[in-house]
Length: 424
Image (cartoon, rainbow, N blue to C red):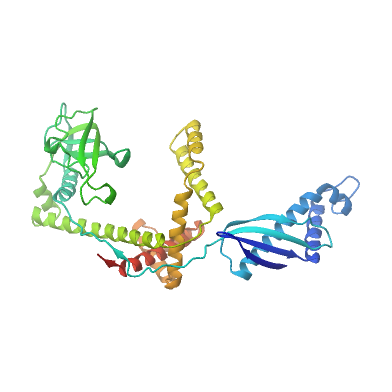
């Protein structure tokens, strides 16, 4: 079989295959031999039917099966001989009729990984903020642990300062929901709700009753994670389920129970842990910022058909989750109809970042060793209290192992971008 490759527009390539006559004959003969063993015609023993009778009855089916087999072989040879990196399945767009003793030509179209030049990815100028821990964040941690040491009792009537409200909290900016939490606990009159300072101040939620929905207003802080929303007006909607009072040890007593010398020592420890968490969050944000900057500077043709297929798969996954959540058939049909052409741009952006990440890893020779894989599996096994060998076998069986390797490789690329960046 002779294979030639022609590059087409974008990420397309054309695979042309010339199938020699003897190979066509061999594959057709094998097809008729196999079907002859499976069927029996009146007057003939199984496997003894004449070829002409088989061709008349099964000729089209045999030819289609052989054509697909030869097309698959052609794609495999093209991948091996020309180091093609295919995206999805190749499509047979032209093929000769298959006849015993005659050569045939096939033409297939496939989408391949894009070829592109990486821009400079070291020394990126990035902005890194200095993380800060506010007193109300520390108080929230202490208060949460204090509540666990005591008891919450339902309270009739309106909430007063110092009471606790349990309910669903939703923070919105315009039409966009930024945060939603069910059965959250809020301290009444403390001056912070969902990490924001309501314009109502310490009077926020004072007077709220079970069954009511209270809407508060606030401005998003200047250190809000979304830079595009900083300083904008937000609304905090609280559906009050219960108003409760707390009975139990004071925070200073809980500090002693936790093994701290005093409340101040506990606060300082919490501050350090929150700061470390924010540093880690900033590292991840910086890495995403760096990768997006490289992706934006990369000129790349992206695969159209593959992107549409992936977008459709994501929509189908969302529909399946709707089934699991108990949505009706009509709701799901409406969702599928409304979203059938959506998501392609998002998939293309995701693919572009993945292609850039893979290219940097190859250029920097960033690989994930078996030792690193084993160490990660051992850490996971310890967390979930399972034998490491058992966990590895499961990952190998369900395909998680390859995903883990890719995720660890991506982490190395992101760390390189962060470490080599210039901060302004």
